Amino acid sequence: MRKARKQQLPQSGGLVHEFWQLHNREFHLDSNHLKQVLYACLKFGLTHQKLDSKVKVHAYCFMGNHCHQVLKYVGESYSLSFFMKLMNGEFARRFHKIFKSSGAVNNGRPKTIPIEEHSASEMRAHMYVEANPLRARICRRGKLRYYRFNSYRYYAYGIRDEYTEVISPPKWYISLGATPSQRQRRYRRLFEKYITQGMPLVSRLIKKIDGLVTEKRHSFRNRWKPHHEVIANQMIRRIDELIQRSSIPHRGNV
Image (cartoon, rainbow, N blue to C red; front, top):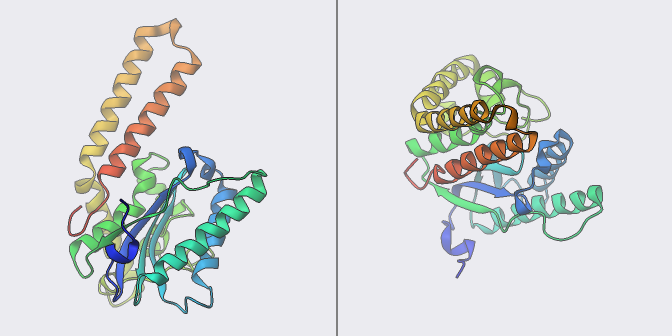
């Protein structure tokens, strides 16, 4: 039986890794327009007068069919639940208006995994969220700063625009340096270390899968049809998705 969020989370404030998927894992969020709609809903939830700044976004990343956020809430977990209800409810309303549809938009309720504050797992969970476009091979390391719907742009390069204005930096980030430029340089080094040491298994596995697909292409030669390519790419994305799920940082563990 599913436990209430009130039973799962601390009632004196806390930090969570929140994530959810679109219904049937559809890739509607591949569209930048839908990502912009989702971001507007995020701002709508954060600025609601009933919340009174009780929920803050430390990190976020919007992917093709799912969304990640590191959220800090003050007081009881009701404020966190209310924020997610506002954000997801508003997104569902706008989604149905765009597609003239009805029914479920999210694949179940959002998952909220507690993160131990003031620990190494807090920083690793933060970087896990921002590294999602690299795991999914949507962009390369040097291009991550141009991925608009990701808080990495702010922490690594200090970019303040309409897509980073919702971010509230955590204490561990502030402690990285006395000036913004010092913090950004230090963060880039830490992120690079996380990428090279925290994701080697994922990288090796994806490389091996790509190698197998290439081998099949050559062996089939003229018999390799366009629909085979589609199936192969779907397999790679599905396996990568399962890896991401199994790699989600737990309390005190990444």
